[in-house]
Amino acid sequence: MNIYTSIEAISILSFILFSLLCFTRIENNTDINKISYLFTLFFQAFLGFVYYIFVLNFISNKLALVASLLIVILFSIFFILSIFSFQFIRLRVLFVPFFLIIIIFRFLICISSLDKTSEVQLFESQYLVIHIITSLLSYSLITISLVTSYCIVIQDSNVKKMKYNRIMNNFLPSLYESEILAIRFLYLTIIFLIISLVSGLYYFIETGDNLIYFLTKRLFLV
Image (cartoon, rainbow, N blue to C red; front, side, top):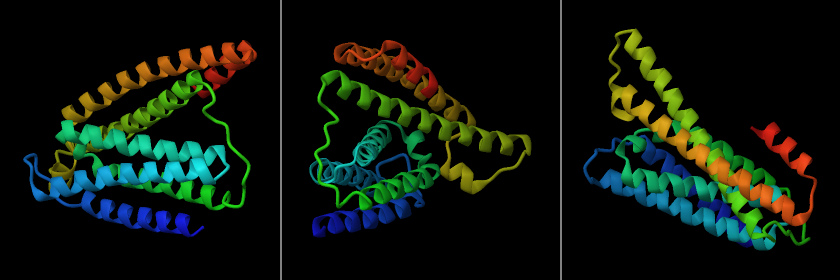
């Protein structure tokens, strides 16, 4: 319990720091704000991995395990994309509420499962591992694409009003750049969804489960 409290406290404090840095002005060149932002983003991914290891060993809840893994994947994706794309960094403010919701959800699930001691077997098959990871990747990317599309709506609204907003111009990518990012994320989402479907199909065949049930479940999620 003391270990969990320490990890949770560090996680909350580091996320507050990350959120504050999201509202600072970051230039395209390598300045102190950009370095600080990337460092805190990497630290969030690392801390999320530590949190995931703790959940894997001490909390018997599959939903808590998946939520923890989702946060690791999300922050890792953000860190990698932020290194290679400055335009993606400019979307950072829009994602703060999304991260906050996911972290609160993980906290509520984990705090309600601390007293459970039964062992969780979630990754007993390599096909299942691939299926879970690619599913989380595809859902993460489609969420990023949706937020990017929201940025398109904001910028399009400003263009139609013939209104120049200095704050939005500094913190958000242009309309064209947002459209390019949204399309690229959609392409990546389709690729990971295909991999997820194929690996899930192989897992169901491997375990001998009902194929009709699998197809119905996948269609429902899509």
